[in-house]
Amino acid sequence: MKKIQLASGFSIPQIGLGTWLLTGRECFEAVSTALDFGYTLIDTAVSYDNEQDIGKAIEESGINRSDLFLTTKVWYQKLRTKDVIDQCNRSLDYLRTDYIDLLLIHWPNKYIPMRETFEGFEQLVEERKVRSAGISNFTIRHIQEAKKSTVLKLSVNQVEFHPFLYQKELLQYCNGNSISVMAYSPLGRGKVFHSELLKEIAEDKGAEVSQIVLAWLLRKNIIVIPKASSDEHLKANLDSMEIELSDHESSLIDSISENERIIKPSWAEFED
Ligand SMILES: NC(=O)c1ccc[n+]([C@@H]2O[C@H](COP(=O)([O-])OP(=O)(O)OC[C@H]3O[C@@H](n4cnc5c(N)ncnc54)[C@H](OP(=O)(O)O)[C@@H]3O)[C@@H](O)[C@H]2O)c1
Image 1 (cartoon, rainbow, N blue to C red):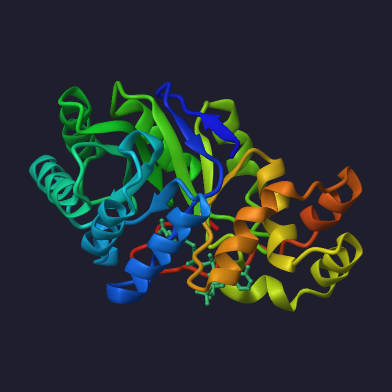
Image 2 (cartoon, rainbow, N blue to C red; image 1 turned 180 degrees about the vertical axis):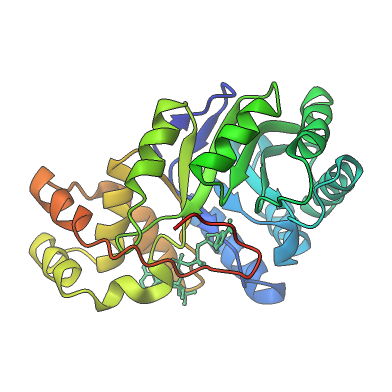
């Protein structure tokens, strides 16, 4: 599995498992199967209410902690210093571990000064409870503010990114600031399967549409965390690392973007 070096100095696998909406037995089974298939990056969040299921699956899999990369996120309404620390301690407990590889601010919140949030992150890094700090759903303006609010290097910005929302400017900005982009909803929550162009490219390559989309993202050095629950999907997504797109195929996919954002909660502060 290819790894990407983060600004913190730690490395992250380029393909992982997203777990939003997976809970209970379904979550336990998907994570267990994923670990069995060779996934080593798991993405969760306090708000997904599944950290305990993931912790159980990890423990029962017997995987070495050092072979695993765990990402979790603190909720946007709980970004005061103490709240950040309390949530992280609870995540550590639920995930049955003594460190989080990557802790993200789930969404920016203009009502809580970023300095307060990062004070919590800085303490957690100092105590070695968190290895890398990052952000999610941050626009360029939010990142500029974040950079002024902490001494920590921001390792990752996790954002919605798929062929229907090719965030080129944000990607360039992150690349220029040594912030790795992690694509969430990389399959557009299923929307990619309806694209005639993607279907054509997939047929030409003898691959699945999902694999073409993930290969397009991987080629841009983006980390991907597709959510999958069936064995077939889990395996196909992991195998996307074997697919190589030509410059032409990739630029055809670049041109799909309709600037279509799927995840638009009421609290989001996007500039578009
Ligand atoms: N930071 C944030 O605010 C944020 C927001 C949204 C998501 N995320 C993260 O990103 C992860 C992924 O995003 P997402 O869950 O929104 O959507 P997604 O990964 O784009 O799509 C998931 C859907 O695609 C299906 N699928 C997966 N692999 C497939 C394959 N090979 N062939 C056909 N269908 C396939 C899944 O079906 P099955 O389940 O049936 O396999 C599921 O219905 C989340 O789980 C979460 O960890 C973060």
